[in-house]
Length: 432
Length: 154
Image 1 (cartoon, helix red, strand yellow):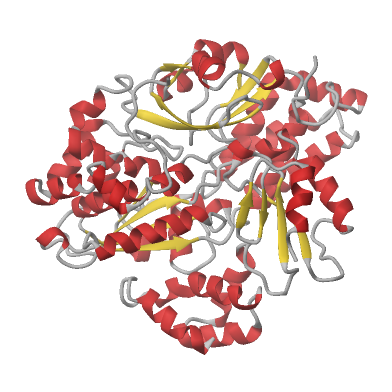
Image 2: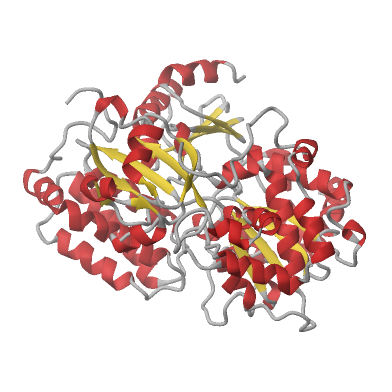
């Protein structure tokens, strides 16, 4: 077991995603409590007091984001749930969308009440088919039951929701690009300030929260901020949905209480490394977070504070386990091809830099690497840091530098000998 | 496009009034479902219906990887080759697919049945490697399971 649970609290069955089952589990009681017994300010206060931090990658405190929105300012406000789950290694929001869509919707209704939102959106990545169908069906159920539309639960509160489907773009998971996409344009990130909570969708105050972040709201309202803070660590309250993949025996989505021992998680809960191999390193929270070696991982607990102290982040919870004998040069090649493909092309350092990095790593893997290539990759990564509109340029640089710092010898070997230090591809074949 | 207008009107009702431009992406997705790509006539009709510039629709079409301006095979076979899928054998799957279908990545079989593509992370890393055929994910794939799958597709 991976500690206490807040979200994955029920057995998944053929009907557990439906409104009937959700209600039988006590669903939509938190909405009734908020609408009938709390003011919008009370709700935001409770969320702030809970210490809930963003689960999409940036760990920003949800209550602080909400507090920027001024109530009764006469402007329309918008709420977007970010379901554009695209950070490689991440597939945890998909679990919520497929198995607990009403938990997300109820939480969005509570957030909309707190933020005086009339129109809410779920921006879901275009490739997600079953998650979309489950969510869209849940929206229709919720409308039919009177949870959306006018006079919700007999109050003055009214709210509509649209499930907005993307169409294939990594960068649209970035909050400002997501907004531009909903506006019906290319998904280009926007310069900030102004913050999106000041001027977001349709130039109005907009709150964008990750699906998992929002899904914690119903529980916080039901049980109170104090109960939420009892779970996890003093600095990182609650749980994290960890989606684990790669060279691991039992990949999947696990709800892990913040502060849970990492070694125990890997070797007991997830069944250890594939094919009896030993652990080499772990990419902890999506490929844009810095890789951590076996020595680092085995000593750490799973909470943001611990990972930050080790120079990385729990990011989006997309954990990729890498076995001994895996070539980090080829692994970085896959990552850089991805970043190059997904650069939206707005900012020169990213548009050109991703292409340069990709060409350099292709050259090294083809046996045509030059001794100066390693330093050049450092330079290009540094030139991206803080010079682009969105964080993608920085993230690609962090990922590159993270691997170069710890596995420089593999790159030097590849360039000098024109082949990998390790045999074969990136799979963990049984032997060794 | 005319027969889709009632559907589009229903969609519009849940958006805040005055922001028809937001319907560009959902309408394009729906139009593409009709014949597998978005035609020039579709663009003209949509521009007129939504009152947005044709250029905006063209920009959206050229930005998102799922939107197409040309027809492709009946079955679009997209293999993920991002990190987790690479670590669980996507390279072997791709080689197998190229050999079995007799086409390279990005090509369509001469009978128009299959188009072979690669795709970036599909958010299905725990069941890697994953292959997406049209809208459906096929998880934990192997060359053998791929063969069985392709045989079932007319």
